[in-house]
Amino acid sequence: MLSRLLHPHKRALESLSEQEILALAISSEEDDGRIYLAYADQLREAYPHSARVFEEMAEEESHHRQMLIDRHVARFGDRIPLVRREHVSDFPERKPDWLVANLPLETIRAEAEAMEEAAHRFYLTAAARTRDAATRKLLGDLALAEKSHESLARRLGETHTPADVRTEEDLTARRQFVLTYVQPGLAGLMDGSVSTLAPIFAAAFATQDTWQTFLVGLSASVGAGISMGFTEAAHDDGKLSGRGSPVKRGLASGIMTALGGLGHALPYLIPNFFTATAIAVAVVFLELWAIAFIQNRYMETPFFRAVLQVVLGGGLVLAAGILIGNA
Image (cartoon, rainbow, N blue to C red; front, side, top):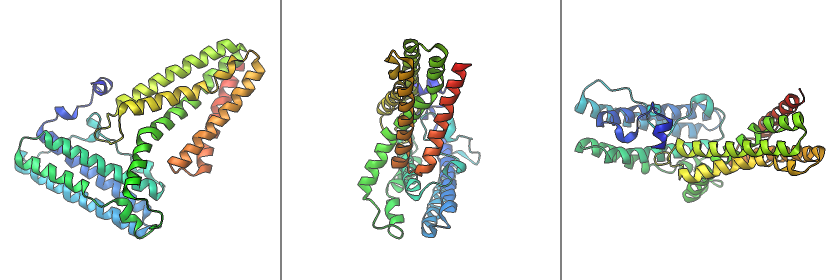
């Protein structure tokens, strides 16, 4: 219900007809196949065997798509309605090619496994909503096909990194932890730490009143935390994407957003303006370095690139707030 209020232009999955469910499945298989081919293109030079694995996966998606088209033609005729994942609320989104470029192999592996799990969940849900026996059987068979795929980590690791490949259970547990807690928490910490810099330091240098600055920081941090938590919880219920409880993700995002802003607001409880400001600036850079560390540790972003993006970006926002406050 919450997702419908936030995305009134989107359809709920349970509102789709049997024909529309088939159309959505066809377009989703096409999207996933294209993504696997993009992964193959990226990996072909350094990991030719891994690239071949993704090409084979794209061929499997193409076969699934043809099976779905054949079923649609037999049941509803040649005209397939235009229903895509972006038209359906709570449906897992797919990143465009330019956002998956230059991802490390481990990240691609985790993304592909998440895609397979989301497809499995979708087919189970879709099969439960169809009344035609043949269509239900096809969707159920596709759910089993997605679920019975070999572990992508094992398929890639047997040739390239056998000593480094974790067990499937460890990969699943780690991926779930990252999806449920780390990603929303990191997004919240980045938003709270960076977006509140300008208003807090602008207020500080404009008024040089530590108490008023603290109130500005408190309101900005709490407001941003509520907004981020609410948005994360309402954006995806986790049923199809496998990202876990929306409540847990919302709490992780909201709490980390609030903490990110409060970190450099709390020093303004100190009455002396210059002491409070010096401590607040030091806290800001600790926050930015923490974000860079988390990106490197859990998201596998190269540390130097993470530092350049986060610390430099945050420093520019901080400077903007100071300049505006002194204007």
